[in-house]
Length: 355
Image 1: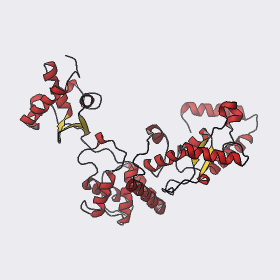
Image 2: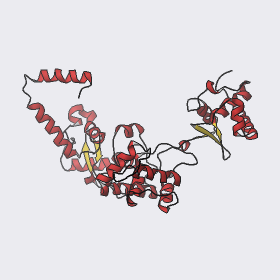
Image 3: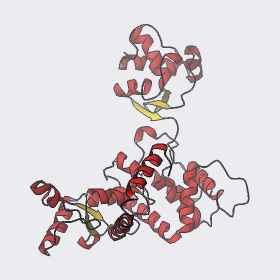
Image 4: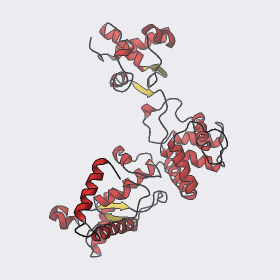
């Protein structure tokens, strides 16, 4: 018997047996426990994906798989079923992202940092909005995904961590506290962030933006993932970048990084001619749906661009230029005879992980 060699017909027979016996009897008969990861969605009903995949083996391979012979997650059962064209859903809602918590914090602050109930119209409205947010893929959303009960519960997690709260905090997560502290420290700015996210979702502007999971993990933006995607999409607008470069050349200026003066053509010759990256300098929480002006853009090299986006708060090209100059001045002030010893000291610290 080859593990995973199941057919759509075999799966449908397992589903029919599940329906005939009922969930409890079906799981008990084959020794399976209720799914904790993924569910099979078929004709409006949900089924324990691991058990269905294991029992499908009985119809295709002559013997049902035992629970310890397969994994219910995406490496085994869920992947086999999805490969056959079945819809797989997560059995639990995904963790809240910064974007979602920003909107929940905005609501909690508007309510005086007090919890809200599930039937509050504002909670119901936020629930509907969160369900349109293009962050979590469909297969990770179950029937309870960001429902009013879940949204109300999140406001409890947030407000119970407020400095003025007198009771025992609930089991929220560190991100709840982090975002709440952003609101406490910069309320006007964070309210604007929430408004931009809300507007972008309602107008559809944030719905179809391309995502780059690697960049989003590597870069840091307190305004959240969606506004960062919009920021990057504007920076990658080829037409806008070309107009900015043309404007600089018409002014008789060279295409050098506005932060460090790096010139691609001077370094790489003809291969680097006309190349430089474009950075949108308007803060994410201020960048609305209006047309981007050339004055909103700065031309910078790839290294400086990555350094700007690496950690929030993002420096402007002028800020980064000052930082570079300060670093250069500091290096220039080191007596030449001390430089080798400092280099050896740095190497020792780097090797031990010491900062």
